[in-house]
Amino acid sequence: MSTSLAPPGIVHEGTLVPVHNGGDSTIWLPFEKVKLYTNAFIIQDGKILLGYKKRGFGQGLYNGFGGKVEPNETPAQAAARELQEEAGIEAPLRHCGTLFFVLKNFRDHAFYVDIFVAKEYSGTIIETDEMRPQWFSTASEGLEKLDDMLPIPYDKMWADDVFWMPLLLADRPFIGRADLDKDNTMEKWWFAEKTS
Ligand SMILES: COc1nc(N)nc2c1ncn2[C@H]1C[C@H](O)[C@@H](COP(=O)(O)OP(=O)(O)OP(=O)(O)O)O1
Image (cartoon, rainbow, N blue to C red; front, side, top):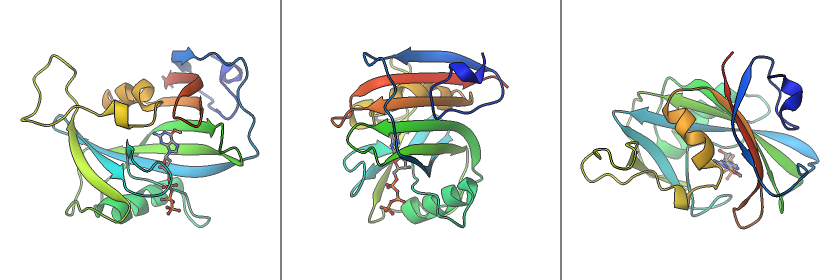
């Protein structure tokens, strides 16, 4: 499909195959400026490492490890720094997705989030001031679970995650936008797989 059919904020030159879109709102929320963020996940042997956010933005939700891209950094450098700061580990991260979020009560900026993934890591996973890391099973319901590991806790995550995380788990590059209301409900969304 052509990029012009994608929502504002999404720029991609190649082929996009939409996988989800919806919401009651007819218009995408306007935003004043865009800030760059990262989010990184370790996925290995049927499990995914998430962090419980102990403070600040997104407190009380599980997410990957990430934050703002500093002015002197590339997104890849920021992703590596945030993974070290928030979980104490290093990993051969590779880019696998791009997400764009606008929050109804937080409209001074939109979030442009580069998503990274790695299948291995080095170092010892530690709890930090900001995040409490925890492994979750990536097995679908009905399939054998790893020991007593819990499934991915979508009910304690940002509401958009359930739309794109299956693409992340399947190693299929993705891109998307979600506009959310202040109570973490989805107003309008569009997610696509990048096929080139
Ligand atoms: C709204 O939907 C979102 N969904 C998901 N899955 N992740 C999101 C959403 N909105 C933002 N994020 C991500 C982007 C970043 O990885 C974090 C927010 O980063 P944070 O504000 O914690 O950035 P830091 O640089 O670590 O902040 P401080 O050092 O100032 O605490 O959430």
